[in-house]
Image 1: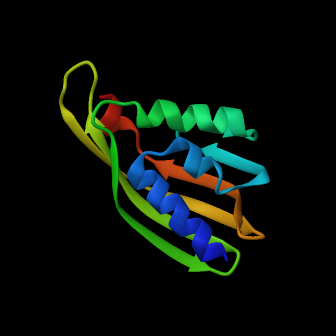
Image 2: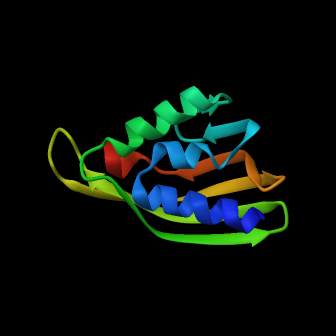
Image 3: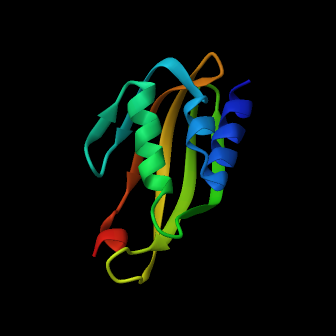
Length: 119
């Protein structure tokens, strides 16, 4: 059952589908962006987070690999796009550490270095 949620999350990232990715989270969850120190615990804010991310110029997620072990998983991913101010391309490699409960994501912390996208 957890594998289904992770597959849905992967497909939602690849498809830049904010609504679909939000549906993979449990009713009570914690989403942490370690780089920005942002913590999100409600669906509206999570949807807005992903909508803003997916609206970036030429944004995409690729090379997504899932490693699952019972109630925990990690997902490696590449986030790429072009900078708004310069039009220069960037690539950021990152990872998500995920806790699963009843087939849904109950906690996710994402780790990445945002400098290539910002500098």
